[in-house]
Image 1: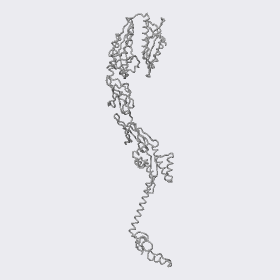
Image 2: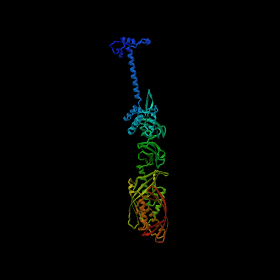
Image 3: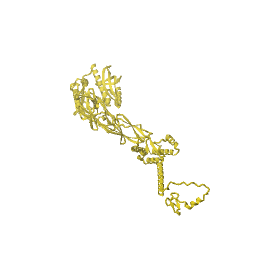
Image 4: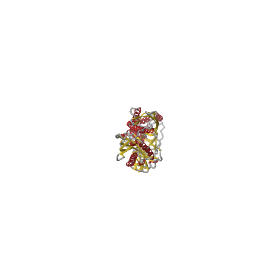
Amino acid sequence: MKFCNQCGTKIDTDKKFCTECGAPLTNNDQSSVEKQIQSTPSNQPQPAKRASSKAPMSPKKKKKVIIIGSAVAVVLATVYFIGAYFTSQERLVDAFEDAVVEGDAEKIADLLSFRNQELKIANEDAEAFVKYLEANPEDGDVLVESVKKQSEAYKGNKANAEDEVLEFLVGGEESLVRLEQDGKFLFFDRYQLYIEPIYVQLHTEFQGTKLYKGDEELVEASSNDFSKEVGPFLPGIYTFSAEYKHEYMDVKEEQEVELTPYDNHSTINLSVNGGTVYFDSAFDDSVNSNVIINGESVDFNVFSDEAFGPVALDGSMEMAVQAEFPWGTMTTEAVALENDYFPIEFAMNDALQKSLVDAIATHYTSYMKALEKGDVALIENMSEDLMADFKNELDYRQVEDYIYTKETTKLEMDTDNFSLISTEDGLLSTVYLKETGKEGFYYQADDPQLTEEESYLIYELVYQDDNWVVTSKDGTWIDPSNFEQAVNIIEEPVSIKLDNSTETAEADDESDTEEALKEVYDSYLGGLIAAINNGDYSEVEPFIKAGSELETAQRDLVKRLSEKNIVEELQDYDFVGYETDGSYYVLDTTETIKINYQDGTSEVQDYQWKYTAVKDGDQYKLTTIEE
């Protein structure tokens, strides 16, 4: 009889393996046992036999124990391999490399951590990080290589791994991402990829501006000149924006910003392109006005020296100014706002044009009639100061001994070149006129020789008592090519004839000679100013003796000043007196001239001249000039 050494089951003697547990069987039948006992020397002490109180394990129970033990071993092995896998820095580095190569923002967000574990990395930030790596692929390669080198450092001497990684990072190849040991899982080292968060200051100008990162509202400005630190952010390319809504404006400003620890934008200015507008005006606040924004009228007096706004200054808004004047409403051209300076320039409209044309036409025709009749009272629309000048002109005309004929066929006003301002005396307009016609000086015995004339005048008019009044007028010079936008003022030609020929007499006595010399001097001054301003020497030619020294000097003067676009105004002059030796006459004079230069500057010069005059036929003419 055999028994299994493992489970104690009785086994047939011909079996080599236990039929119950499968263990190999040895030769343990009764005869062999007895042989062993008999072979033992009789004088050798026999071991004491201990009776077993434990019942042998049943084959079925023993099998169950074996199965359980095997399962535990498998579980322990599985746990080991799982722990080793999930705590491996190689797996972490490989996963990070795959995420970078694939541009998998969600995976990058899961793999990276800020040191403050409460700060969660958002997928939107990871997308900005991926966008940065796509724009800078070489940086992605360097980043992956850096993390791999850090992993290699941990494979060596773990005691020195942290020092090796630190030495690598400080040695000129600092990485955006650091691989660090982060505690244990069971008996395995655990690793984590850390990245430093970036914080920035957002700044905006206006209270109420909303600041965004992408579609996410970060903060609303609680004051003007507002700043706020926001974050944390991953390195990346972000779109920050500011949105401002106000009564006059609704504008959004966007900026694409690249944030990295190496080029950190400590402050991002997200001020919308807006501000207050200041008006440059020649009017005072007695003129009522309003602002027109994108076609909508806003009640605001632009002449009050106050700024208007805030408004968008990115060209998305158009502004015009509308003002109420005695002759009607005037509106500036609508301009796209791109800066905080708005010059108020009114173009001449129909209402202003009609009021000026009517006033000038009345004045001009009455002036011509008063000149012909010698009656100051006939003049209309002229200031008292100008009236005094006209009286002097009448006195001068009445002592002449020649016939003067003038016919004005056309009087035009330049509607494109004018100014309109406020003054202490009221609204002042400056206009330019072109006078076209013919005129001539001749004696009764002569045939009239009328010369075609085209001259330019400058008028200043002040609006008083619901009408324009001429306060100043003078000759000027204008490039004819600039006088294009013109309107005719007089409907019919205006003609006058001044005949003083009945009073002609030989100027034999001293008083007559003085008046004749004064006359030629007066005519010379007016002709010289006109010649300089019109660039035409013929204007002064009748009063200078041909071939004289003065002719050469004044021809040169007219040419030089005309080429430089210098305009002169005769402000005052005086014929002090004269001396004569019987053949020539030395005139003692003073003159005050205002010189207007091309660049807009001007100066006033006082002169004291001595002119020499000689009798040339029936007339006196000037020959020299000296200080």
